[in-house]
Image (cartoon, rainbow over all chains, first blue to last red; front, side):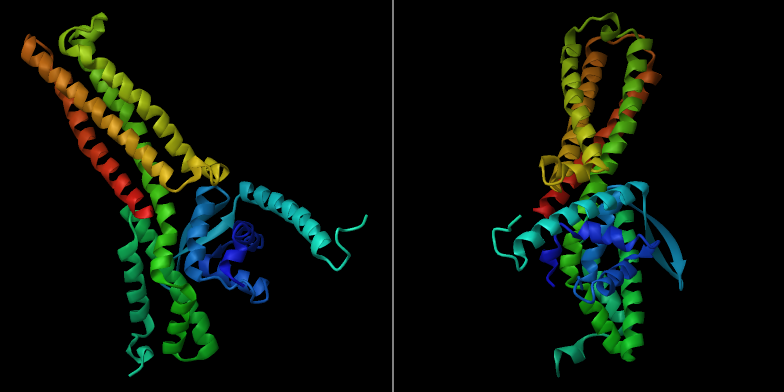
Amino acid sequence: MRAEVLKGHLDALLLATLTAGPRHGYAIKEALRAGSGGRFDLPTGTVYPALHRLERAGLIRGSWSTVNGRRRRNYELTAAGRRALGEERSSWQEFSAAVTALLGDAPWPAQA
Amino acid sequence: MSRAQHQPVGRDAAADYLAVVTAQLTGPTSARAAIIDELRDGLLAALEVHQARRGSPQEAMRAAIEEFGDPQAVAAAFAPELGAVQARRVALGLLVTGPLVGLTWITAVAVNALPPWQQQLTGPWLALPLVGLALALACPALGLTVAATGRLGRRLGGRVGGRASFPLSAAAVAGLAAVVADLTLLTIIAAHALTAPGSSMWVPVVLAVAASLTRVTLAGRAARRCLATRANLT
């Protein structure tokens, strides 16, 4: 699936990958890929700037650790991030229900 | 010989990839170094994953680099974030140093009972309102920079304050306003020293002049860098 398709949803998807606990950038990218059954296989390099943007917005918190002698930045959800994710989930459920109603197999316009 | 056979392999290829990203990044040195450290860890983590799948280190590194994508695109994607970091640092620096520089001037004016202390604007001191004008421009610019580069930035979204170039423009305006304020004060005190020489307490004046000279240099350089980074965004 193309990266442009995800535009507008990437932030919520990145936040969702952190609900299970802290992850580093590549692990987040892999969680996106695995969680979508391989459909969301973004260029890894573009995931990192998005994480920096979310950190600046206060939705995730980054911290450095050392793994195998190299510096690693791990990210975790903040309280604001959890709230934002909850709002994004509600919004998505409303949106997807509306789109499903319109694009489903039922005759259009959808009958009550 | 194919292009693939020319490509360096293993950690050399990772270093080459990161060198391309490094060359394209602009912004504060520490922020750039942190980005490269993070990308290096990601590349090596990807290498480990692909090596477990494919076995060959050469194939694994090629796959990892391919997975990361075009290094120039990666650097370009970081540009707005680095710009925000740069603008925020400039704004916070001006917010911290502004009151300190102001305090040195108020002290110099007060201990020497200079015209503004006697609520008189005469001679070169007639230019003092220009300092007020510069501060009136700098303060909102600093507030907007801090807001746009912090948590509020996300809420601003695609609006004016949410554009990547906006914080850099606002920080540059604030920096240039600080330069105008300092140069005005320096000109006033130089003119005052020439036209009304007297038995002044020079230590506070020298401190104020030194503070303003330092800030003129630093704020001017910061404003130029913000404008240069802004130019790279567009």
